Length: 137
Ligand code: T46
Image 1 (cartoon, rainbow, N blue to C red):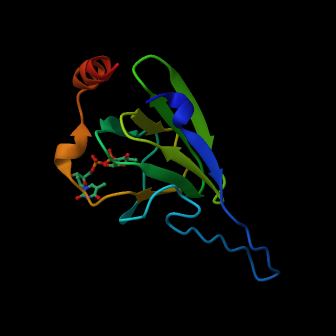
Image 2: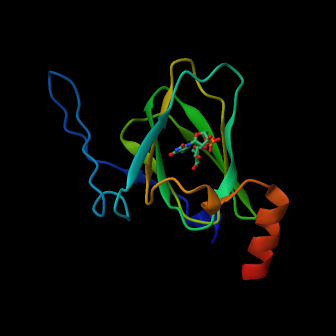
């Protein structure tokens, strides 16, 4: 898997004098069926999240409110995405190391995930991730 497979997805925006609405449908706006949604909020200044990879899980990360940076790494190349629009999602496929930092005050990161939570799906140690990536290459 390559960081070039990490892509920004633009979701529909239904603009209205009452406010804006963005629908996200699994299998249509995101390239998998959504099995789980979780969100990260109340992040203290200077904190970072993630710092791991998934063996199989695919996700889409959305800055529903505020902004943050997502650093992605395939073991060879790295990229950074600054997320700051509620109608943009970052697709992160399996076997990509990710870290999230630079959260603005009050920001909320929503994750749409392709599977239920499974701790055995994680690489939480970077060296283990690198070994796995090299083994697959
Ligand atoms: C990711 C980034 C963006 C659960 O019980 N259920 C869940 O669905 C999740 C995601 C976590 N947990 C438990 C596991 C840990 O005891 O919540 C605790 C914190 O999880 P973690 O340290 O993995 O949180 P982050 O913010 O470092 O990472 C999470 C996701 O785990 C990960 O898939 O890509 O958000």
